[in-house]
Length: 76
Image (tube, rainbow, N blue to C red):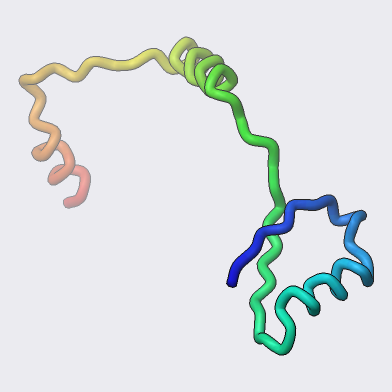
């Protein structure tokens, strides 16, 4: 059996533990706590991406440049 509780840490009290004990009576359980950060909306991600593209415009590498050869030189 598995269940998920979403609550504010200030809502944790003895009654919460008692509910868990009743729900999982005489069973071994794992308790994982995850800090839920607000998700970034697609629009916010788009705006951040747009700002990065302005700050660091995309570069076009000539098709005549052999990147493998450059990597070999760097690693020698």
